[in-house]
Image (tube, rainbow, N blue to C red; front, top):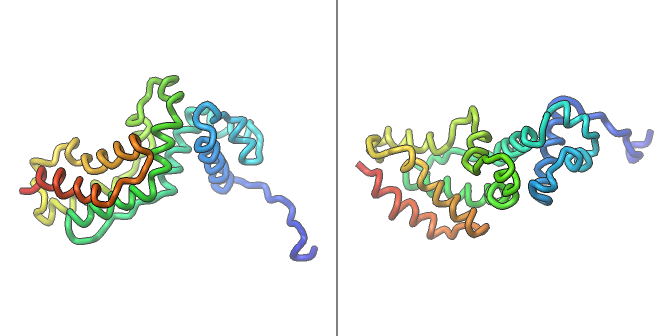
Length: 197
């Protein structure tokens, strides 16, 4: 066979197959929303059959949960190492602002039918996607406590998540990235005064 001749299609198996299926599922979800997110549509996009999906995911809810988790993990967030709480938070918010906007759009806009059908919320779906993961925000807060930049008694769960929650709210409400000066404002005028010793 000449190197430029078409190679026979390789049958995908295991992790390669699952990766292809989840990538196809994400594409269908982004393009067609929850209403168009069916096992048939995903199978067609992946170039396979519905039974191939049904062997892995009993329902489209199961497939959706794994698709959101997969999409989240395909956009890994690194722990900033700037040496200060302010620098680390600003770096994290900038990275989330740039890398997670499409995920926020899908979860906030494209999944209305899912939330209505199941009674679940965006927070429920986010929790499902974070099962077994340690968050970068936890690392940032722990390092800041060790450096004496945060009073741990002031760091309630709601306050801990406030900077990311404010960014997420902006992304959900506007479907646009947050301006850099607004990111700095969240850190400097809202968050830091509340947690400093």
